Length: 303
Image 1 (cartoon, rainbow, N blue to C red):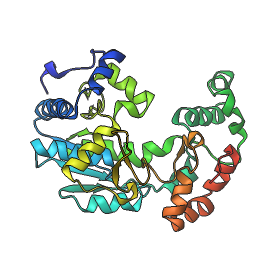
Image 2: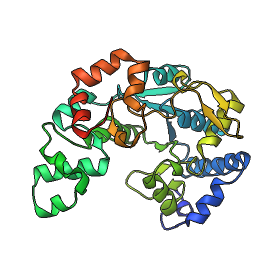
Image 3: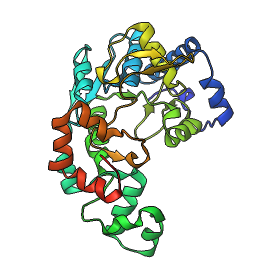
Image 4: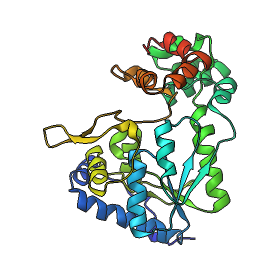
């Protein structure tokens, strides 16, 4: 049992506190992240691992961790939904364990439904379909209530089956606690998590550490360029945009290739246009064989 002095679950931070941390220079953020990593490592007597997707954030996290603890293992959850360039990048790194889910994305959508709009709305739509009460109806956003009559299944179960469940199983079987490369600026949910818990959440059913929580996208790109780290080619080159900022010449971010959460908010070219340009065979499989084209047509997203 780890020392209770590491328990951060009661601590809360203000938005100003987060903004101050995010405005720190990169060197200071590296030092801060290393402190959180050491706390995590010590709390669990070195029984820790890094969730390693091969994406920009996880590439940086693995490097920062291994600067202190070179023997820490990386864990790649090979869901079959990663861009091929990410898989190629994973192969370039040593001491990476590959974990596969029990089901494929195709099986998940057949058994449970497609991930559309958002996790929250997909869960609520699925709940209403299983239990059509006034309460479950009122929980669905007015904008998306028409989806309850969609001619296809809808569910947020995909993330759990492909990622969370394999992660929980790996952690339990190997007695390790995970570090992940998520950042507070990426979403409202991740920002709220940081404000409530900080980087390290020790006291939970599934403890987790996010040592890069206060980093920005600029920090990630700067670190990769400075350290000359291997990263997926789909991002393109890291260049200056002329305003003292860095950007990539390829895609801005990667996630699960066929996921439709948030695609209605994207400017064109959206993730499916990009998939068509980079991987036409995977695009055809997704749109035509899996049936994602029908779903996108129904929610009014061009692809």
